Image (tube, rainbow, N blue to C red; front, side):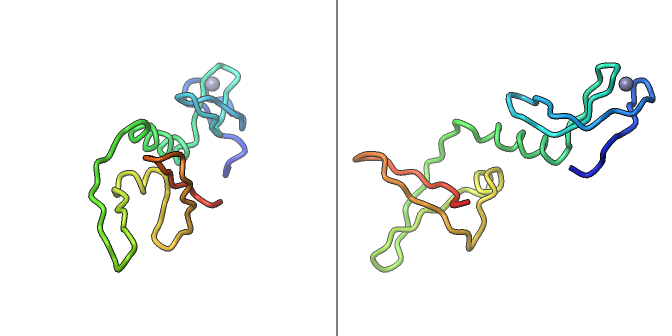
Length: 105
Ligand SMILES: [Zn+2]
């Protein structure tokens, strides 16, 4: 987190760095003694993106390069979960009809 404190818009006092809750996530932010809370804007934006794709389903068509099948990850999903070209991911088989992909780090 960047700033130690920020001026509270409601009362003018200095809101201090704090761990807050935002839509079910732990988030960095600032809390003022008057009760006002300010969320880290970058983290809040990320959580909103993730919330948008959470439990969503994407029907995609498999491609093929030689003997390997290619799965295209929709941009909206990749952006929200921060999957990027060149990044290594893990494919794990769940059962006869399912596998999932997860970030290595
Ligand atoms: Zn305040």
